Amino acid sequence: MNVKRIVLFASGSGSNAECIIRYFSKNPMVEVICVLTNRRDAPVLDRCNRLQVSAFYFNRYAFFHSDAVLRQLDGLAPDLIVLAGFLWKIPETIIHRFQGKIINIHPALLPKHGGKGMYGTHVHEAVKNSGDTETGITIHYVNAAYDQGAIIEQVKLGVTAADTIAEIAAGVHALEYEHFPRVIEKVLFGDK
Ligand code: GRF
Image 1: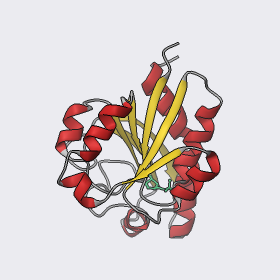
Image 2: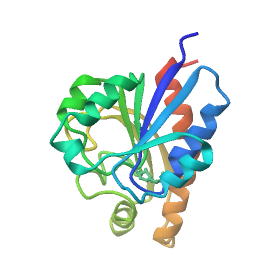
Image 3: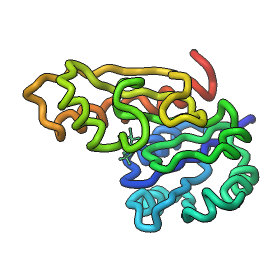
Image 4: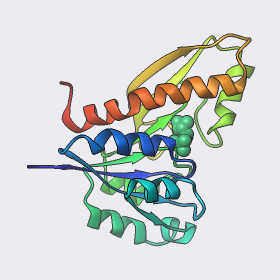
């Protein structure tokens, strides 16, 4: 049985990470090996404890100025690395080693509202301030440029001028929970 191995990266709350872990806990062909985080106090660590999934913290030096994380990933031998709310740019050494095996979710319809500094509430504020009538989620491969890798799937959400930023955020999160695990499955196994 060739079980597919997923490594998750998360920096914050980790609600997507939890959703992905729960989704694949029912699939014997997929294992979420562990979660890696760059924040020692990230709430995702509590979720991992609760869900009985291993989690590891690394600091800026390990990530950007050593090959510690690269070596850890080599040892973990993931079929797919999933960025689920991970806020640091992935070093080229890791991108190069795991070419085509790293995906990210962005809480808007790229290429709109992407790039450095565009994360979390900033994205939803930008959507509101631009008067956009739709937003959504983009799941894409990760390459060396922020938010510019090939798009795998986008799902849209209509917005109106009356929507608050919190409402937009909630709508986008709901789409993420509904679609991200399914798209990961599709990337691992192809279209069924
Ligand atoms: C999500 O909105 C995701 O699109 C973005 O960061 C957020 C992470 O939320 N990249 P959570 O930590 O999964 O709750």
